[in-house]
Image 1 (cartoon, one colour):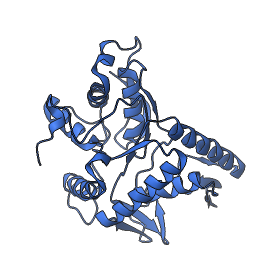
Image 2 (cartoon, rainbow, N blue to C red):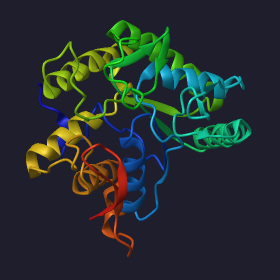
Image 3 (spheres, rainbow, N blue to C red):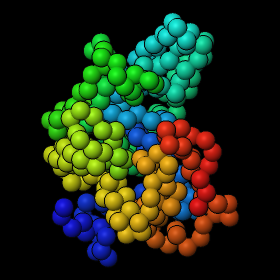
Length: 294
């Protein structure tokens, strides 16, 4: 991989060119952690937003943004066995009362619009090129205990697919806030191995290659080097992931967050809040079970 100049003292041509005071993160699970870290290590001088819990593939994120930006109706899926109603994309929005799901969606919609309107920069995580599909419906995540369900198939995005999706995402965001800068990131999250890739590291590397090619087609100014930053600090400090070997540790989030703050305005790092920085702690299955403190 080519040497990345944002690790040197020379200002990067591929990273942050402006002094952003407000950043909205959309997409993968690292969005919440980076949003919290940047706000904390800038001593709350940089405002950050992360209105979604996790939307881990680009088509699902585009579909949600199209619904929000065009004031369309969300689709609610009914699980007749569990008697649960769940938003088609926002899997965390679930209830045994359909009206609660609808009302919660309205609140999330308003938050997404407000966050984008108030942001100088919107960072969009493209998640994974590997998706899951059931009955021609793309799933935002693989349903619990359904890995061996023959009705669910793997779908892989190409760089061409991602370029088209990214261009449509740009249109959606600019329809909400025409003046906001937009950059796309690739999360450094070890992907679950599938029949196409023999191991996690190969799947992750191939995911990075396809997504990087797509973003470079848009232009270098659209690239936010989240993947490279995580990889750099993992190799530099030998920092491990959390118990599931996929989610980054609190130390890793802290290092990457401080690097981003330093790129924007290094003087903001001179003072940090009195309370300890923390992120969600996950178990071996990736389930949240408390806080991990720095």
